[in-house]
Length: 155
Image (cartoon, rainbow, N blue to C red; front, top):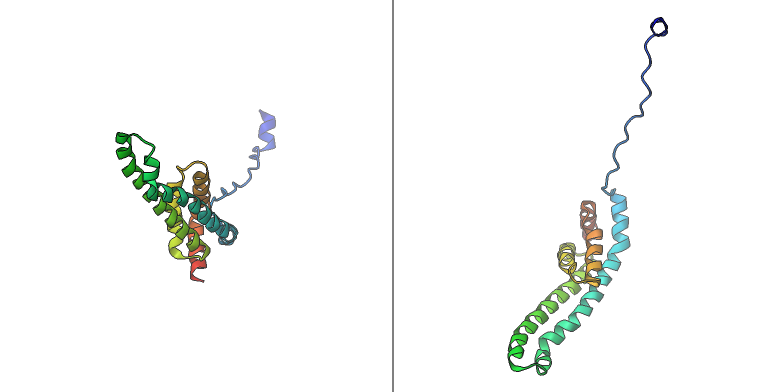
């Protein structure tokens, strides 16, 4: 007891200053580099995959009676309107995808929003649509990318 009283108070152990948590946000220069690196590829992929989806849409919409010729009577009447609707839906989303791809290549302001909406829709189309949808969201969704895309579109 006497020894502790003579030595004085025990110094507290040295504690390192807490480090700030790494932010998940991209710096403006990183966002610009990320967009410049991936925007051209993203636009080309949107055009290619949308053109691939346009072919079955055209076949279903315009040649549905050819496919229905091999079906018995009641199935044919069920198939024709559904095939026409699915073909029209495929053509509409494909043409919107081509527009989004061209818009991304030309850095139009509306193309980012259109590509994000279509990317969410395309996620359910496994495997290529899923890959394109996830890639689109990864490139275009961060807030810093939105600000940088607007700067690039206005330039």
